[in-house]
Amino acid sequence: METARSERSATRPGSTVPDARQGAAVASFYRFQPVHDIHALREAVEASCTRRSLSGTVVLAPEGVNATLAGRRGDLEAVIDRHFPGVDVKWSSAAPGNPVFRRLRVRIRPEIVTFGLPLSPSTPVGKHVSATAWNELMADPDVLVLDVRNGYESDVGTFNGATRPAIDNFRDFRDFVSREHGNDQRRPIAMFCTGGIRCEKASAFLLAQGFEDVSQLDGGILKYFAETADVGNAFEGECFVFDERVSVTADLEQGGFELCGNCGRPLSPNERESTACERGKSCSTCYRRVNT
Image (cartoon, rainbow, N blue to C red; front, side, top):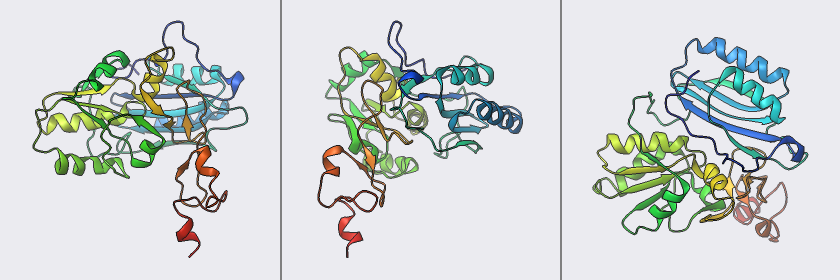
């Protein structure tokens, strides 16, 4: 498969990339490009991943692929090179002993991220900006910085001053825009998400609605972390991820958050010290509901 519009690698020349010797390596990637013979591709990818004991999720759709896989670095590279040559990958790592995913899932869906707006390589999307350009955008008071992730993700970490739509599902982003910013289409918008894929959909939607100046953080927070590993990281907190790690730090290593065993809310180490937090049963948020 040859890329038409995708993220660039989250690895800078000369930077250190986590590998399986420090725990499982984790590869995240997406690409918008028409997939042909999708059922045959699903079977082939599943077989290759199974042979190499990889776990994770691969979503295939007519519009492209979206995947996060965990395992040994060499095995991940072999599978990606075979089935998705040329795709740009963001690498991170897990703590030793953390499998990252409990199983392998290779699925076929209508979209690689559900939003109700399938994309093609020719669909206009927001301007991709680097970490340096992103920091400059955030410093401009005229720019509306949008965190397009779900509220519980933003609770784990976000950029200071970013507007949080307070949504629990990405599909609700449409309603948020119509409700809060539908009459402000000339204001510059800069948006970000975990790895960039949700910004592709959200920025395409904004442009289709008549918004004139839309930018997106290239490669999302994960690539931002890689590009600001030495200096310039303006992100506050950790980045929520949808796997057993729960969060990753600015060093792209497993973070310190855990999920509440009852409500699934991400909990920081300090929150887990609360007397209302009982491992596997409740946290300070759901304690009263559980105990009444």
